Length: 404
Image (cartoon, rainbow, N blue to C red; front, side, top):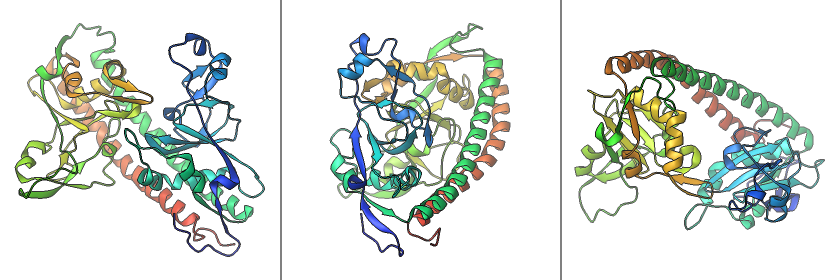
């Protein structure tokens, strides 16, 4: 990191000198005594969803703690993801252990730097961590790099003012996210009312493999060598653009492809996009493409599913794959390693799709599109809030947000 000039009264400090940084650990999954009836909260990257970490999805036992590199971090510890997904961050509101993909960061002297201030500063470095992350199989940040990370430390009173402003901005962003979640819940309620819970298939809809009722294609590969063949640059969708039930088009990048491949990978309105995975939250994540960007392609970590319109509607399929039923299938079928899960085209092609009457699907699609208009209006506000928070964080740590 560049050591830029700081305002008067501010100082640079190496993270490793003002904090203790320790990675977590995972008890053996093969030993039930380490997991069954565990009472010690155990944090995974997927548990780091907001500033305060108040609960976990898994627990380990005391025996699991004693027989692994896992350790309990006290309330107030900052947790930062350092493997695969880089730079996700939160503050423990409970005593908890965590896995080895997460580093626990504990401040030495809270009279010099506050936990909340350091949280926001490290959060602002997520793009930096993603850029420098390195690894053979998965990107990671080693502790040496983390300890050498420079932190601009203003007087404590200035830190408090910065935190107060960023807290308000984040709270507003969180309220918007909750409104978005309620909108998705409305989709799910309408879906279940019309088709029943797909986990139970109460109406006995017939089942077909997804490849029997759609065309499934992987996307363009980034960084190919073209050997002087004619190429062109076109917009393309990355995994980051395909969220759970919607598209985030805040940043659409371009990719170089063969001119002859443009038609092969081009997206058309009604295509259902599904991510192959990586981190568990990206497994089978999907959304419907409605031609938001003219002549847009998709990368190879995204599957394009083009349905047979005589049997399926895109909106129905998108909800089916995004339901608990769909997520359970993908998790069960996926190739999995520590914190990582991915599906291949064969597994997606074998997805068992329920086929309700087309007229019922069309009814759902009309309702979906109506609700989607409201969601898109909310999405504009969501993107604006995200840009605002990033701008505030960029200015906060250069002295431009608060003057002493």
